[in-house]
Image (tube, rainbow, N blue to C red; front, top):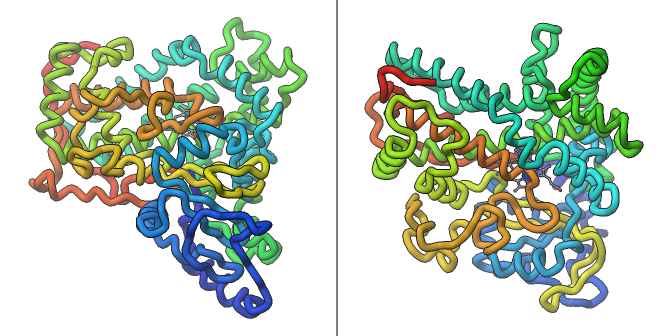
Length: 503
Ligand code: HEM
């Protein structure tokens, strides 16, 4: 969820050279109004601490926090920032002052791709956001809506099983990262648009969205040193404009098709249909909202769910002991020869612990960003309005105080004795879907999808690493991005566990 990956070094070098000319005249200070600020390292004028982030900012910030503590003050370009690196720090700041920390940073990419913050994810905290959130929760993400899309999810998962079966027959290596992306794209696009590619109409919906995600995760200098924005050194503004124009063209076409079919349909199935019927009833919903919400839902649902599935399967391949227990549970609950159905996933208790453990070590969204709505004093520190707050989720899962046993190991059994659920309500040591008012409203849909896909792949197939690679040889490096995906694609060879799968 935090963008500053691509091209960070060339961009920083450029900024440094450009701004060092005027740096001598700039008197930057982290002390505001003589009031106490959290500790932090000394920074450069203009650049602040941007140079300290490195290729993997979550790790660099973890190292800095060991020196400056779990509440640390930094400045990225012109943006005052506080990094929270423990459950106690998040409790003190976010939980106790939820409404004060309820904004998100308004970055340039999000401005373009959310149609000027007209959706839910990036809209400013206040009545507009409340209305959008209520609308999405009630009409798109309610328990009954999530359930109504179960047959669609199941159909896509069955198609996936057939594809893997074919590869298994011929002993082929499968690129699981690509396979999972494809399954989730089809599921999510069909749920939102009722179609999955628009290739037949000469568009490449998937390609356009990949560019949206790519640009949303890119480092854009103008977000940190706004007055450099007019020069567009990185060509970002040009790319934002080109991509949103292309995206808008496809979204308009999809909406028009839905409008034409609208009156003849008795049932309004996909998100666009539902939003169009709301537009007819509610003056607060217009065409721009529909497009912004559609983009929001894809951005929020797709990469997060795919990343979690790939990390979970990677951990299972690296830990044959855990894989064996998951398969034993599936055999006992689902039974050999049966395909897993969504109604069964709630009975898979060990799988649930496996997914929790995967979230602990590989949170989808390593750095959760928020922004202060107003000036506030917390824990004796003065935090001014529009300060960026970063919760370092990556550190939370690896904090030896919170997870004293086998901290760095993949050990799902720890959740036998730790009473935490996914929601971040009980305990902030584990909050993979965020916390408070801006916590994830798609948690149930995300969990159903992740559990169903993982369970199916592990129940129907045995998996081995290619070329006789030992489990401990699997590369587990992450790359930084919106959802901290695995750096290398996950490749594995399937073989069928059952001869006659009943679907
Ligand atoms: C495994 C999958 C998912 C993960 C790990 C995940 C995680 C997150 C996280 C960490 C946040 C930020 C919370 C905060 O700031 O406290 C978030 C926000 C959000 N998520 Fe999810 N999410 C997932 C799936 C979904 C799905 C399937 C949808 C909808 C279809 C969705 C919709 C949203 C929305 C709309 C927000 C913004 C809420 C707001 O700002 O009010 N997410 N998600």
